[in-house]
Length: 424
Image (cartoon, rainbow, N blue to C red; front, side, top):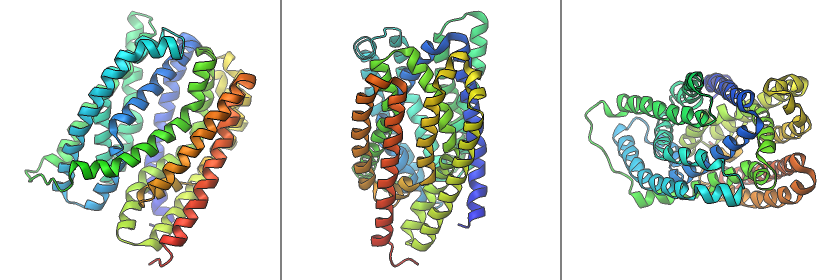
């Protein structure tokens, strides 16, 4: 795919990603202004635990579906069969994990994070693990079918639109921090219903025979390594939040979460690119079009680096103004934000190298890189948080990000040299 064609497709995802992040900013802004950094910190911890639970419930199927369905072409029989099989598997895993998280909410809150206020937030999020897992399965189908507009709208925008509207309505009658979770939980249900309607119209409307072309064990054999990759990448991404939650307090977590949210905007381009190129990587690799595959990766990296550096410069110039929107107390994390911006520069400049390796059958390499980096990040965060607090975990994150990208680039080049030398 030529550079400008890729850029055009990425722009669709990018526009909705920017819209979604802006809405996410607004939601966090409402929480911070209404209830302060401490409640925002409790919400952030509960939300991260919820996303870990959903990731485990998916058992890697969200990534595996993209890989398989992209190779099916327009064969709806196979797509329908794989969709139903994925829903059946995730129904079992999500109910089990939901029950476990609900029962463990008190222990996690009191003995790990030492804040009983976290308990109700965790319990409410645990209720929607099943519907949100189903939503992620549906979105993987939409993404694999290269419906970028529909995927981006459902993935990035709809939840926050509904959550903000419901939150504001609830706040009219009663000011209670539980309105935060109530609004988001309700938004998940609404978005799930919309996704089910779209999936039905897309792949179930025609009366076609369902093809069970892939056995459950074979599907899990592909998805479980991807689960490991996704899980460890989440550990790397959220180690700083959990370390602060354990060793500091909710107020600190709330402050730091805003710095994280702001710096993550630099990865807009990379996130948008990943949406577009994941099925394309899988398709071109399956067809052994290695030259086209390498060109696709090169163009994607250029787009990711451009957006990352451009947004990073804007954040450096207007950091005080952006932080002040959340409240005067958030200005204190400006130095932390600068460190996280450097971390994101490493991330975005490398491009979608890990998606490239995942979609070309090299997820075991990604798993080893993520595993090693997660250990390094965890150890550094633990050591640095004691003496340096938020700045310490930010420095650990920055060093880990650099290490991860250097290793990723090394093995990406090795994969291309060894496996794709005879490009066509």
